[in-house]
Amino acid sequence: MNTPSATALAHPNIAFIKYWGNRDNTLRLPVNGSISMNLDGLFTRTTVTFNSSKQDSLMINEHPVIGKGLERVSYILDLVRQMANINERAEVSSSNNFPAGAGIASSAAAFAALALASSRAAGLTLSEGQLSRLARRGSGSASRSIPGGFVEWQMGTSDDDSVAVSIASPEHWALADCVAIVNASHKKTGSTEGHAIAGTSPLQNARVADTPRRLDICRTAILNKDFDTFANIIEHDSDIMHSVMMTSNPPLMYWQAATVGIFHAVREWRASGLPVGYTVDAGANVHVICLAEYAKETEKRLRELSGVSDVLVAGVGGAAQG
Ligand code: PMV
Image 1 (cartoon, rainbow, N blue to C red):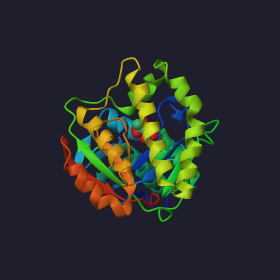
Image 2 (spheres, rainbow, N blue to C red; image 1 turned 45 degrees about the horizontal axis):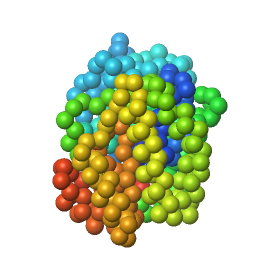
Image 3 (cartoon, helix red, strand yellow; image 1 turned 135 degrees about the vertical axis):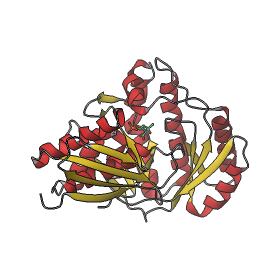
């Protein structure tokens, strides 16, 4: 091995056309393609060092992690060890610059940074496509945090071609994500468990069958910088995914009263001329996407709504970097 240690940084992303459900849970091959944007200013930085210790170890924000969290990391390290033909265990140390529980899925940035840092530390130089596939094995959405800007994850036909690619650079369109934090009182079901039960909803087949249409509308709206079409399709897609979640077995109800309050406000604001649209992941917090020049105004209005405890603002982020 040339360099036993490497550090990498990756941004989280917010999906505009959502990934929900796998056709292969182990390989994390999705039932549909998805489109997202990386979030600038927010990142996970991860250092991987291969050494002579007997076990892999993991520190997140300076706290040791064992159990399921460490197992998921070791699973990626095993894939890297296989590719590099090495046996050394690794010390993984990771930190986020965004608060935990801020409604930003940390797994996307975490597994993208891990894929890049661990492969480099093992002496491998992987292509963007190979890194995207490797990150996907840790968390599906992590595949989209490898390329920069606006990204499409093509569902593909197999492990080989289920990869994410950039469809537009970060400079292409100045959007901002104003994340309205809504305090959820109960513990949410994680996305890995959620994907596994997506097929129990009678609405999932209809959602999946209609996805190519929504992908086309969203991709074209991004390429044409057509905000109104974009806002309508991201809200529609988010609502469809949550309809599947709510009607799965067991049902997943991520929204709080304040979540719905924000939906109504955002639609009213758009109708009266403010370029905003909402989307929600597997949680109660609302990502309000706007033209960047309206981010201050959007943040101010969100802070005035009842049930909103904080607002985080992010622009369009670049690719994962080593
Ligand atoms: O990558 P995962 O397993 O955390 O799943 C992400 C699921 C959603 O955030 C709800 C949608 C998406 O496409 O990011």
